Length: 144
Ligand SMILES: [Fe+2]
Image: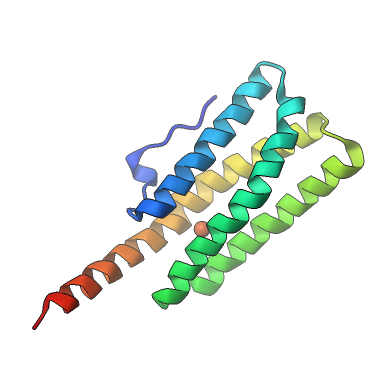
């Protein structure tokens, strides 16, 4: 079952949305691989991708929050930290046990659940805040 991108997931911040969509593409490749029985081979490469990509993506979001003095910064950052902790556990599991079925299931659970909950709620709230701030900053600049 593929994860489908839809407008209801959009934060309205172009760079963040583009990164989320890239995340969707990668995760769908993993899900497809699992469905075709190729999951065990694919998990390792998805893990490698996520490790680099997610760190950069979180840093991007957190920089936006700092720049615009986002009031829920600490809570949002805490979720990013929690994801990275779970991710580290998953990586540890793969390092010790190899890319087995448990790792495939855990990867699916971690990334799919995170996407559903984090992007749909937490990132969209951030997007709403950033859009309001960006509009007010832009209109303030237009004022004489
Ligand atoms: Fe986020």
